[in-house]
Amino acid sequence: MNPHHTKDVMIITGKSERYSRELIKKMKEHYLKKSQQYVTIKECSEYLGLDVDEVEEVLF
Image (cartoon, rainbow, N blue to C red; front, top):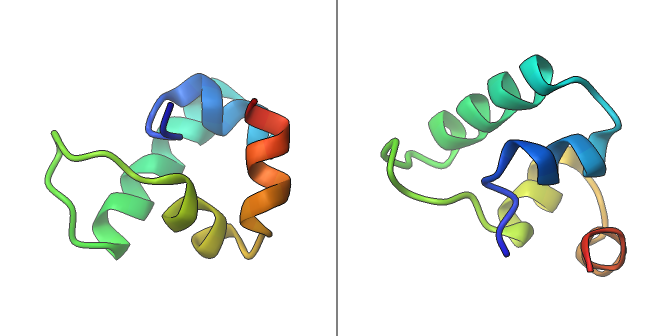
């Protein structure tokens, strides 16, 4: 599972669905991704300044 899903980002950040959708959009712009491309756990963690292992623990 990749944190491209709004619910995954909601779990990671503890923020609302709307905030999480906007955050995914910003991450895609930052990493020059197309709308159909996924944001990886590594990219999400890096963007948010979080440890990848800790994010994976929360998601899995």
